[in-house]
Length: 212
Image: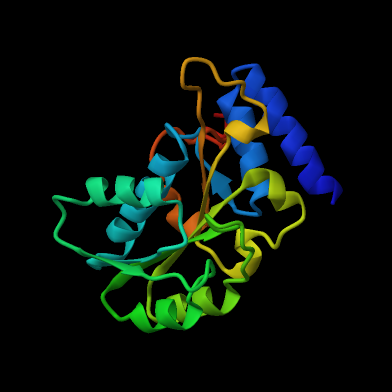
């Protein structure tokens, strides 16, 4: 719709002008989440940071990850948590699709987060609404890794019940040169704002009522 198309246009324009704070507002709108940070290194790091957010927020020690997520990102996550006291459970994909029943069954009271990708690494589009509802019932955080351009037509992470949405933003118009630049987009619900890494730009009032 117009809102999503506008968000994409703003994100591209702001990124080209070096305005991450402006881009962050567009990211939050594009992903239908409450707040976004001023980005991290790339999409893989964004996914890893989302997992760390969930671990901090819940105090639990288990991550459930869909095998249909980009294998490079899954390797990055393994490296990220190698020295952490936690269990990383990878649920096998089924013919290129997410095993929703297997993912749901893997979520227990010690689960910090369930991580999925939409569309997944094989290009399959899924609706994770029921999975995210099951995660919420167990006190776990739902993390959705998405392709930003397709958010104009797909069901948004927030609509499915995701708590954190991440993406690789290079496809929004950042020309590659010597291996970069990439852009790790992160957005979340308001309840997770204190866990977001990096910069968060906003407007508020100080104790004397002045804009800050």
